[in-house]
Amino acid sequence: MTFTISPKFLRPARNGLALKGLARNGLSRNGLAGRAAALLAVSAAVGALAIGGARLMAQIEGDRGIAPLVNSEDIQVDGISVDVSAKTGADARLEGWKQAEKLAWKKLGGPDMPVESIDAMVSSVVIEHEQVGPRRYIAKLGVVFDKTKAGQYVGGPGAGIPRSAPMLVIPVLYSGGVRQVFEVRSPWQRAWAEFQAAASPVDYVRPSGAGGESLVLTAGQPGRRSRLWWRTLLGQFDAADVVIPVARLERQWPGGPVKGTFTARYGLDNTFLGSFTMTAKSEDELPAMLDQAVERVDGLYRDALAQGQLKPDPTLNSGRAALDRAFDQLRTALMPKDDEAVAAPQAAPTIAAEDVSGAPTETVSIQFATPDAAAVDGALAAVRGVPGVQGAATVSLAIGGTSVMRVTVAGGAERLAAALRGQGWKVSTGGGALKISR
Image (cartoon, one colour):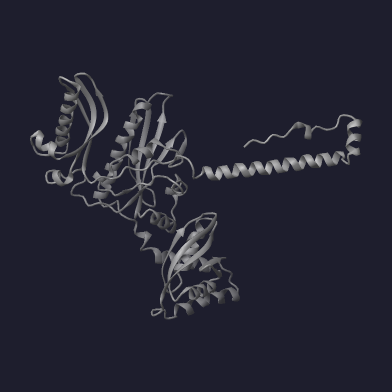
């Protein structure tokens, strides 16, 4: 939206006749300046509102991530190159497919079998690139074997290794001095989205970056250390831990070679696993290089899984009680030390002594202000510290606004509200939910 302010509103009078005319119309120099200032203020306010609204909408709208391919349980072998000649292009193509099936079977380490037997176990042929001539067929193919038929001969990649727990994938790309995940459609995220992950023993959870995912899964997310924050985030994607494959692309000159440095990291502490470098001769070869890099990074994660490193962080769940105690100690240390302040926390032990074993269980929704991540941690710790609370988790997270948590508590909402008031929270009820604030 464009706003234009005509210069005639700001042009001062050049002679006395103009001022006299203004005076006859009931206007003075001060009145003219006042109207001009008011017009500028209104225009600036409308412009700021339009720009601000556009920026807010731009944070979640537009084409961002690429949806991942659906995992197949079949055994797939990619990157099979064939070059076959025959009487016609159709015959060359058919012969090329049979040759690709034989090469793929050999690549899997299968036993020697007739081509007809191998073809009976093939469920589909994936055409990555092909050129069909009058008597020649050149192609790069992928072959997918039916697992129920071929599984008795070959186990496929990752056979014999137990699958990992669900791992959230945050593919971070450094390119042009900027790091990004889902802010734009990056080639690194595309490579992970197109990776056939069923062949890997690592259970990858690959977000698409749609909607609010691009706001919470950013390049700065791996730098967070709050276990409560990670527990909330991983719960939204049904994941147990996180892996962070990092790609750093350096272009030597426009249209020239592209050097890539790839690093495999994992866990809530962003632990380093391994790194390697690759080079693409041009931008056209960059997608192929990234596909190979994904397979090599997956190999690093497989090795870590086999060595027992790639497992959920025990501090996510087992450390909940220790974290709650730490928050209670911190809250006690920061509160005033006068007699009245010290007397107020004594209400908590009386609630703890209350027998709620036979009380009915109720699910309560609590609204609480979350200006930052620390507010989320503090509110969750306070609610989980109330005796009788069996579970508390955020169902709507809004940093800078009002978040909502769902609490399962024995004794009902009134007992929960009384316990929170004893901790110093302001509690109000309405609409079937509690609203707490400091």
